[in-house]
Image (tube, rainbow, N blue to C red):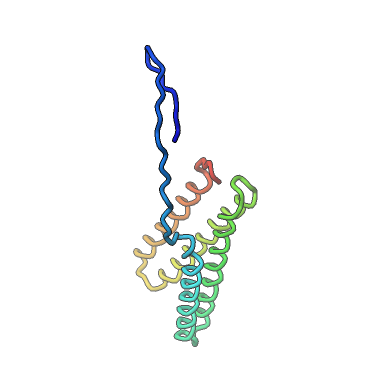
Length: 150
């Protein structure tokens, strides 16, 4: 029980309230599922890549593209994890931001290149314009916008 003194214009009078503690619910948080989810999605990515490499085993360009994309995705995930673990305001966090932006841009450009080989000229121009807007937009939002958390 907590008592405080409340004052009005003429008198002081005590105000007592009873504090009740509510037991915490025992639920599974999203953080406890994170390692399971990460392992599951990584296994899915590896399985999908193996199937893609097997299907295009006669095309060295496609096989090398799949392997390069997988390496970039793995580096991107590691960079994001390192960025999350780095202390706010540290130089390491700034370096990770640059690496994350670079790897994401590399993936965008790589996928756009592969897709535009199958498109008409006008549609490929539209896709490259979208990639350019995305690259410039993410750069400006990620680096030029003042951010308190960096």
